Length: 104
Image (cartoon, rainbow, N blue to C red; front, side):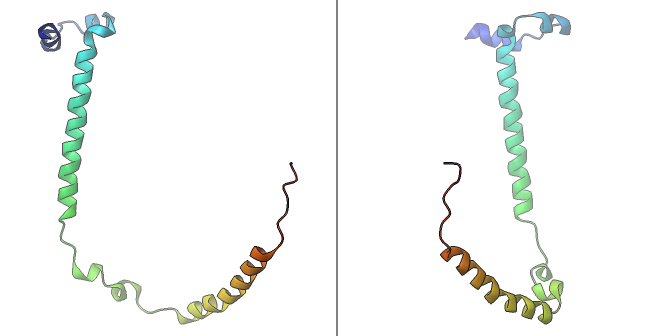
């Protein structure tokens, strides 16, 4: 255990020496770096969440009439008249006889 800690603390002087060494010698440093990096990301995400979660939103943001204005009644009537036609077409499709799979 002590030897592993010494390897993690030991910083080589030449970067090319680090790259030419066996991966087993530097695996501990890599795992430590990954855990520190993931911990920093987690802390940053929590900070960002709490910063955004308690942002004050103006009251008129949720007011639908301020954003939508008036309802287009002609378009609404067109949609409502098309619904019964689509419903009858769906009933015809659902009541149609099943077609066997031709690949079998």
